Length: 203
Image (cartoon, rainbow, N blue to C red; front, side):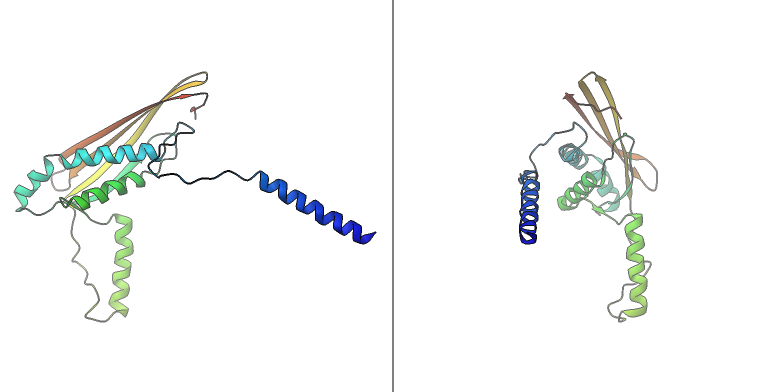
């Protein structure tokens, strides 16, 4: 009898496992550029649209030529300042900022210097080298390149909802500021509006 009970328990466990497997999600991989909108909220497609628009805009700005003429042709150096998310959503602004930096650097027309947090880590490594690295390979302090411009910005959104129909509007504004004169040499913006049916975007 005991053997029958053990076998029955084992079969039951197998049945439960099989039932659990049948409830597994159906996952498939798609092209990263595929537009996928499920909730109507900010997603990777919006981030990509913003970065592509801003990249085209900033590289066409007169500020690059103006700086080259006054600096003897040297590439301007940019540092990323605060990009504020003023929406009620969690938005990772780092994705399109990284895309923006990558495209500008690859264009060969400007460069970026490390942000405040990145500099702290680099300086810590340089201090460690001063103690442990050989004299011919250690990196010296006071040789960092200062930035010429700071990139700042913010993301705002508004939501209009009635019943099962909702509209969400995003506005992304970026500003490039001359660190010496505090002049705003470039301002870019991107607007995105989405209409969502049978969903709720209210916070």
